[in-house]
Image (cartoon, rainbow, N blue to C red; front, side):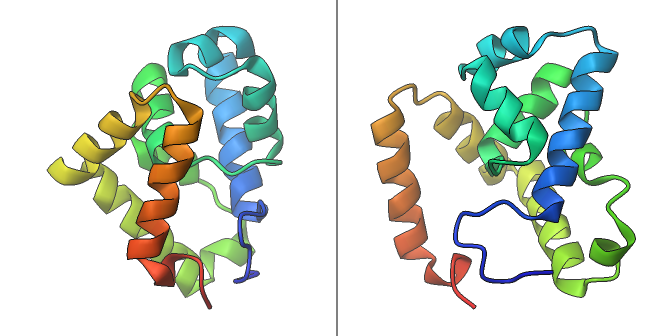
Length: 137
């Protein structure tokens, strides 16, 4: 698995997108309807589902709420290569643990409720600055 992704989608992102599409379709929900529920365009939903764009933690949490599934559901059935990768497994466990925590849930909901895209990008950049290891290696 590649480590230096710097915002580029990976095989895991494609897997999450595929799981998102399957769960959306199982519920008979259109891309447009899902996008409206989480305040993004249907084109963005398409990019998530194709794995072209990464799904952030707060957005993943929103999807889990709308689709009424636990966050870790998006990671079920990871390809064998990713399953054998300790770093990928650890990242999935950290994300799931964070999403289940009180602080994590509050942070994701608060971030998801920020409608101004510029403000969201600025907050994300602030978080990356405070946690420099998040983008390095």
